[in-house]
Length: 416
Image 1 (cartoon, rainbow, N blue to C red):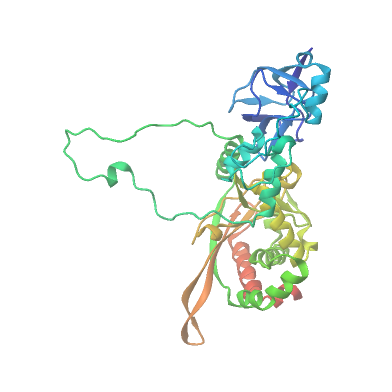
Image 2 (cartoon, rainbow, N blue to C red):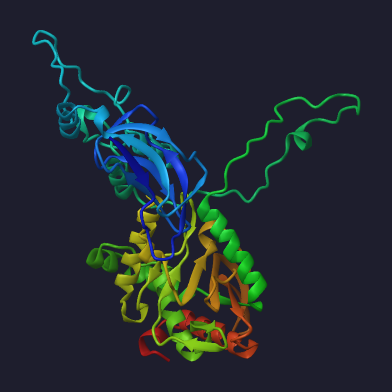
């Protein structure tokens, strides 16, 4: 019996997906609920399970192609697998039994079978097959084993180099015009991911539809740094999470948004909609690009709850396990380019939001204090805002209040 494999309804705003990778090839047997194809949406990625046990007969969409919700992308033949064989596949057993005199082989990291979805994650996160603990039948490594391994690993940002790569022609010694260039000159065309396409579209949309302007300030991080050092051990012991900078900035942003409500608003037609809640979006780098999960009603969260939520977002972003609901909405965004070494930048707002705060690397710089030149840990901050809603005076007041809250953290607790 031929079974259609269709793109299911994934989210309210999702109308199409991109085929990221087929985890099974035509002619291969697949059991019910086993992932058969990896899909990518404009917000996240997911695996589509097989609705039945059978054989993948035909694939209609290739890797990199788009498919709409409800569209048929493949056919499966349920009758191609006998019922007894299907039951054996579902239970992880084979119909043939090994001779009693032949000893069972022990699976080693070199011979362990890696399931297709797990292999994709291993390659994406540069893991060796020996790192995950296999739990599948016969010592197979499943996708869940790799995800568990990623969750157990400490979250680390990949180092980035500030040195631009030198081309082969620039690195090569001078040569005469008659000599032909040597070395590889191959090119590779890779389909742009749906996530990257949507990011590009939204950035262009923001540039074309909003009156964007960026204002800057610098913050002395001495007080917050000293407070972190003083309370880090007790904070981590009590809440099992590190006290970071982001919780201070989330709290400071909320207080500044109360002062300048236009940065927490959006334009809908001919109206300005002011929100009286604060859903703060936090930009996080993942294996597939930048994602922006949202802290709902952040005004009601404690420092520990904010740090715990952000750490959880970061772990699951690396494993592509953030849900669509967590990535939708947001009234204001914070983006920390400082973790990658950025000294100064002009962030672009995420429509229909009206503002985004860019944080940058902390550096010791000479500053004047009480008639003396001293070294202080300083950070540049940038606010990009929609000038249609927010005036320059309000934008400067917003950043000034952020600066005051961070340089005097007691202001956050006293809400002044």
